[in-house]
Length: 284
Image 1 (cartoon, helix red, strand yellow):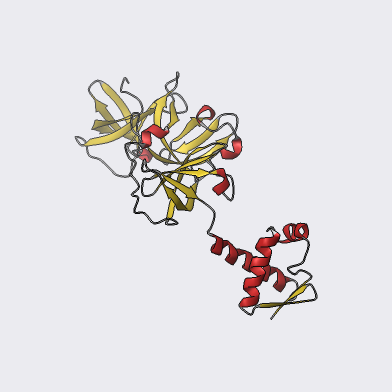
Image 2 (cartoon, rainbow, N blue to C red):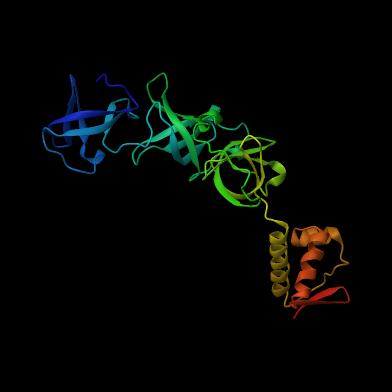
């Protein structure tokens, strides 16, 4: 069969066997297996099929059509990781495609994990097997929306990481903005394909945005106060800590700086939830 691989073809249902439908296009004839379609066909009907080379080397067709073909791009879900090869992404229920490690970040902790999504197209290797090819940033330019200068700062945004490097990461948001996240604005190292939520901290003249994944100061205070209160409750309502306690001990115990601890403790006291006596803190 000489139909081009990695593309969709319309074929004629010309008969039926015990295992599937005989489908033809010109001089090309093959079998569309019953398990590769979700409906039944009559002789003479036309059916769209995706043509690809199966793992055993046979040219195969499926009526379960992928969202992307050679020459088009789309989002696909990561299903497995092989550090020596790359990651496999889900094309259809029966087709997983390798995205080679050369297309992935050099640092493994920036690789996507299962359920992360990548924007890719398809290509063929020298053996005519399907391969994924990661979409470069330039591919997103045609889809990118220009962020208005009227956007309020700290407006919430969500999107996928499309590039991750030491200096920071690039996000393509659900609103189709291109955003940059400096490493200092992250609470953890982000992965390629990871879905993240943050807030807009700058709208640049070129219509792109800068994004922070860190909460605003008052939101961090809420988290710190909750951490301290939960710890006091776990210690039967009393802890040997106060605003004069050692900074290193505070950081080791609560994972926050002494100044953050004092701000959060002050908030809890103003709200009447705790009190301090003799260097200790008590729940009220």
